[in-house]
Length: 308
Image (cartoon, rainbow, N blue to C red):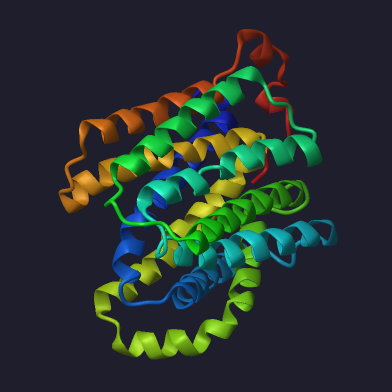
């Protein structure tokens, strides 16, 4: 591997792992959601994730995050790990897939706008164009996979709240990564979310006693891989790029979900679904591409502090 490009490639690999893990979460949520209510599922997932992250912090001897990072960790933990996970689980029980795709996928657009407003990130034309293409692809996938169910006003509002919480959490997390490690930001953010979800502890205990083992295992998987590991790799990649570009990367998730559903569940996608997935991937490629002038103007990776 080219030493000069090693940090950039590691960040791209971390972002790729995050996309794959978050896409797999949709399959697990479908299984666990039949036995667990939205709040109980979120709490069980966060407790499993916090346990794994706590062990990793102990092994790596990661202490408390610096004071300068705590505010961002608290805000991102409350919004992204707390509000987002509960509200999204609830909202997807109220609306059809097409509506959920349309509303929730405004999240990356909000990230780009909020990061430009509060973090001073640029909005290059390629990023905006790529996000527009990916958004169209995400909506196409959602509409094509819709079962024709109705959409309630409550469900639309819940999905909108989830999108806003997701965007706010990412924008709050970005400055914290300038003072704390990716593992610290993820571990303490997950702990904040778990604490906020403790009111659902009674539901979790009652439902766990009746839930099949497969549903409980899926809940544990959600905590270990899509939460503990994938949120850490997300934070690692986010620390090395802009919030807008990382948000645009998540538009690849619908395309990967289509592929995983095809391979794991035998759900053969239609032509419209495949076309939407292709648009998602094409948009991500455009949004993460750079002009030669922009690439030449960026500092070389070996000149930056890229310590983990």
